[in-house]
Amino acid sequence: MADVQEVKVVRLHRFDSDSKTKAFADIAIGDFIVKGLRVVEGKKGLFLSMPQEKSKDGKYYDTFSPVTQEARQALAQVVLAAYQE
Image (tube, rainbow, N blue to C red; front, side, top):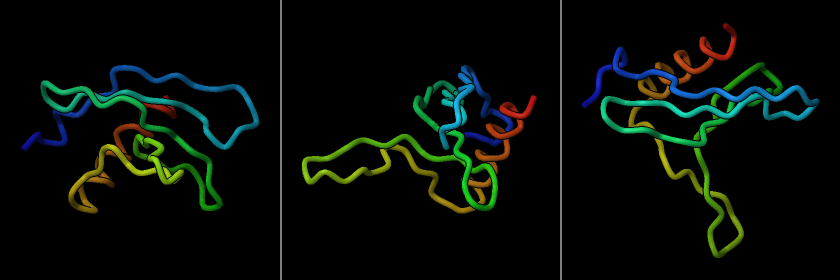
């Protein structure tokens, strides 16, 4: 599996609006690219939202998700650090 050091932000598009979505990001994990991650302003601060797709039942489901909580936190740390630069 890809090491955290292999994760890098390849695109970060910030928004200047009052929306809760502050940015969209695409990341590279080794030789793969994951598009559509979002930096969102929540009640407890910024967090990383995984890419989602609307299904036939009208609900949104993640199309990409880290297997462990540690992997999710490491991914969020990389993307939020790039957002705050």
